[in-house]
Image (cartoon, rainbow, N blue to C red; front, side):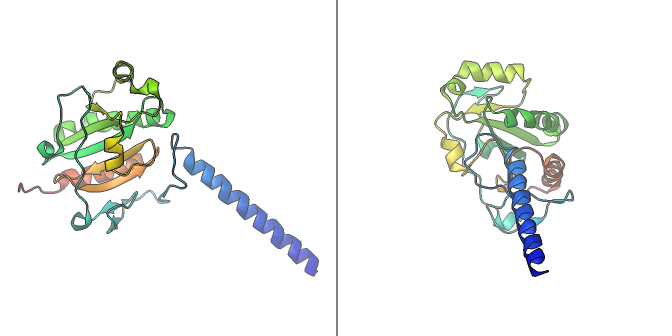
Length: 213
């Protein structure tokens, strides 16, 4: 009887280990060429939770705990003249880190393009920060071609030296950072998915009052 209990316990431990490994693989499958060991994922589909941590992921950060977003480093702009975050005060801004060679980045484009179409006239600006990994992805002509072929209409800026990437502490493609009307980082998400939750964040931030100064 005792041997049988030990055998059952061993089987249970092995089953749990297999489940945890499989879960890790599923989470990481939504991230392209990542250096992240693990990604925080929210298990519910309700509204984003409030949080105090300025570097939290998948949570809506409280305004008084939100850090000011770093400036965008110089790069070549596509679909727009040069944009400065300070000039976008009063608008909600999505800073989306991507590279055209990343399969997972391409999977996020329908959501980004949909938000651009629905909310641009309501106060949303999306900026795609193209931070390449390979030499092929550094070519401005290749980036322009990819933007055109993928029908990306929102502004895109190249980040070939990864200066903006480092300033924002980015670890993986794709990463979506959402700024409020005062230029503070209120939300960030790594990888694919979480689209409904991010759209709720966009709507909430668009509804917030803005006082200049």
